[in-house]
Image (cartoon, rainbow, N blue to C red; front, top):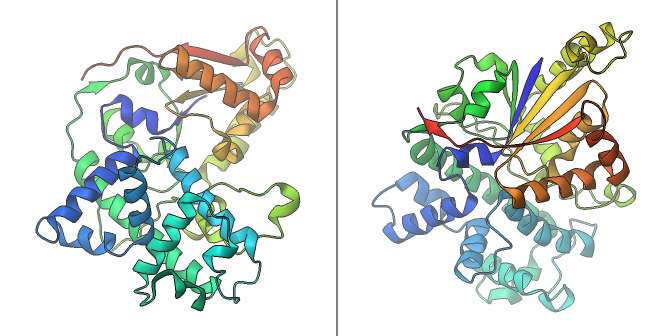
Length: 356
């Protein structure tokens, strides 16, 4: 069986504007136009603490980077400062003078005062509880996600795509795990939606259907501390996947197809005959393999029923991918797998895109 894992690099390879900075540029334009062009978007982005914060970081050139992992890290940075300061959500928010005087937190704190119409600015913020802060941040996060969904539908899904990937065609995947919200794979390569699991949700054109897009952060505490800090779990991906019911189809594929098939061939130990071994080939295209998604990806690198083939764009990208795999499974295990015969981990240079 061939399984395909897609990240945002897949959409980018098709020349689609799916970086979060593309969305921020769109938001800035909508703000400048006011309600003239898009009333619904304007309503969603007005007095939105996360929109305000990211737009200001973008305008001040303070963003960590242009990838989605950078976006998540910016959110984690703010959440963790509040989270580590007070474990009682019913306590009042600490004055800025008592918090980490980080430049980005100072910016967030000031923008939050504006968002809440505080008459005395930041001096009024400590009159609120952490519970109110969490509620407002969550509400604004959902409004931002909805605005992003509209952006993806109008600026990405409806855009004509003129190129395709020969690598994706050659893989001829039986199952697709997509970390993307868009339906570009279905649009270009297969209209069989039963083969595709959008693990972080997907855009919904029907406004009557609830948005199920997961846009959150990874666990920022270590295992010993995580169970002590649960007040901000609503912003974490594992919680959102459950609440938004993105489903666990990929788990069924792994347990009931890949592992079951492998166990049926367990008596054949000659890895040079992969088909008789029941090995599942996992092809990864456009995903950074960052540890933020290791709860989903790590099993492909640690279970012997999988061989992993990772597409890379250039040598710089390949080096970054190698570093992230090593972080996930350790240097010794990485060396063992890449030097096995045949290799359990393989890096493949992406072929040039071709006209559709």
